[in-house]
Image (tube, rainbow, N blue to C red; front, side, top):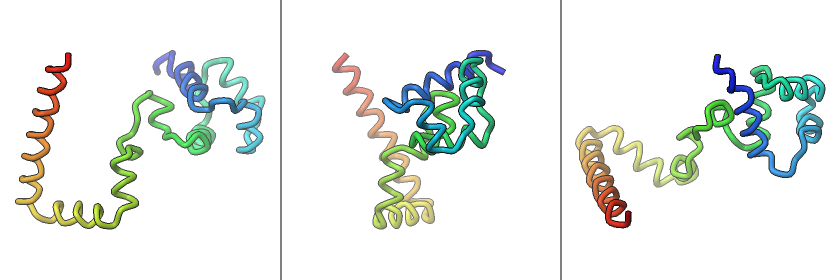
Length: 123
């Protein structure tokens, strides 16, 4: 196991918790403060149940707290599709039709090439 994993986890918790104290988080989640304090001071990860509860409380995902990488599932794009019935219907239609899926892939590929060219011009 990566020796820095616990340290990095607690650094990300600090980043996400803002002005909240660990004491307040433990109180709100009914976690044992001494256990969390010991985990934190010894750079150990909390148990999986506590880890999940902390991530939920901080409105982030476990993947981010463990790796520093945002999960695509929490992206603004996914949230838009989740909350927009027309977007969901469009995605379903595209997924059912291989020709539409192929066309969309070409559009995305073209868009990415154009976006990269524009980035290179700016640099």
